[in-house]
Amino acid sequence: MVCPMRTDMLDYDLPADLIAQDPADRRGRSRLLVLDRSVERLEDRVFIDLPAFLRQGDCLVLNDTKVLPARFFCAKETGAAIEGLFIEESEQGTWKALLKNARKIKPGDRLILLDRPGRPWGHIVAAEKLPQGQWRLRAESDQSAEAILRQIGTAPLPPYIKRQRTDRRAPDDLHRYQTVYARNDGAVAAPTAGLHFDSDLLSQIENSGVRIACLTLHVGIGTFRPVQTETLEQHEMHSERYEISPQAAETINQAAQKGGRIIAVGTTSVRTLETVAQGRTVNPASGKTALFIQPGYPFQIVDAMITNFHLPRSTLLALVAAFAGLDPIKAAYRHAIEKKYRFYSYGDAMLIL
Image 1 (spheres, rainbow, N blue to C red):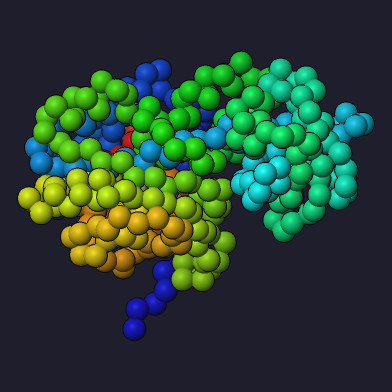
Image 2: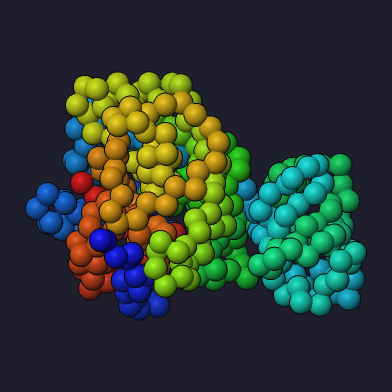
């Protein structure tokens, strides 16, 4: 009988100064730690070295979700400031959102939406309090939530990246907390492994004979939530919307049939591929996936992956531990800390072969 994996086995100590507060000066200039699983070897490189590890006939799979400017600010009529994170719009004008500093808000309160400089833009009503700090809001506007957020919202950076509302870096975050190949609106967090690519690097990879396929998984707020149960088995995995087109499935399947490796960019691409895989074949599909990949999971289609460094006790760290092995991953993280790699969303990357 296999015992359920304890969550505390995903713990590690990270000095606070290694949590990246800004992206690298240029995409592709972040560091790349290469882990070769076959020999458990680590190699320190730079992300623009990635093509040296790819082969003609491989298939690089990208997640083309586009991050909404989902962080917004509003104020009570008294002037008290409130920060919000948009989650979804169930119907025109009805939002679900997380609200901070909202303890004194009551259902029916009318809030002032603020634009990026902090000026009044419009109004939204706190219609209903929901569990886990969430609210149902009703916007007093004929515009969709996405249209409003494009005018007033800022990048939904995770809480460990510190940004005040008036931070001068906020306009840059709207650009840098987004992949260069983002196409489909819907995420409230970035697929961060893709942030290291620029257009020139992607062209270089494609010109070398590597196929590129795009799928979509809209990253939700659950990606930041730590596992709080004693074992991974007890954790209820969040679900996220995905889509893989017939064209993408055909590109991936052709590469796999001809012996190419399927290289997933990010844990989101891994989850989507493994959700739709039947052996070495993927099927076009769309829907929601709550697939929880943890140590012991039998991978079907993913042969290699590019990923950032993840938080302790996270489902993302469980996924990479499932792919590379818990001990090799913990050794890689110790090495990264010793060599002062930058961690988390704006940090450096790993290539796991």
